[in-house]
Image (cartoon, rainbow, N blue to C red; front, side, top):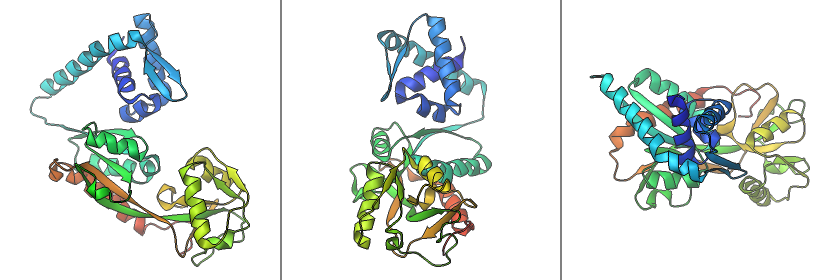
Length: 302
């Protein structure tokens, strides 16, 4: 039995997800699963039950949880005492999936250079869950997709990080690949669209309606990563947030739109929190976004 097993168990109990716990702890999902399985073997009991909606504690898991929390807390206190005069600041940051690779990961690299005293834990969730976690004090701050009147949400403060445009991506060899001007969404009226069901499809249909057409064939994809992969494989075209795209992909054409749908990405904190405590985090996001604005993107229309 080792400490990492208790740390994994406590994170799973709090987040209700093995994948989210892996992101927060900095392990692979399989490593966290092994840690949980090892703890269950040591305790001789099933501690969690898995389902399509995540994981939940069994009765024996609930009995173990307070003891596991005490063990983890005691270790963290001991480590702080042994570290002596070295003061470290622990932050809990949330992000929605599309911002992880583009903003959060490079911002953590920036913070590692300028603020090595910061220890940052990451939680990845949809924006509504992140808002609730910030309001409850479970997170120090979170990157969220803007919603109407967000700055006026009770008890929360929102600061703009980036205005993200939707772009159309096409496969290599498509007639629009490498087009040097902004495209019109209506130019793709007859295309097969690759789209994820739910909110993402509603955004596409709304934008198409404003452009004067209804998408014909829609090929479903389970998530954003699958959408990009399907387009690269020549299965259709897709409308995606520019924030979610890595630069310099030779297998995709990225076409900026003449009148693109946009969404704001905000840094959300509690209004009663001193903004100076998180100023370096916000500055790191701004630095990363400035670098993205200045970086060339392969096969993009300008």
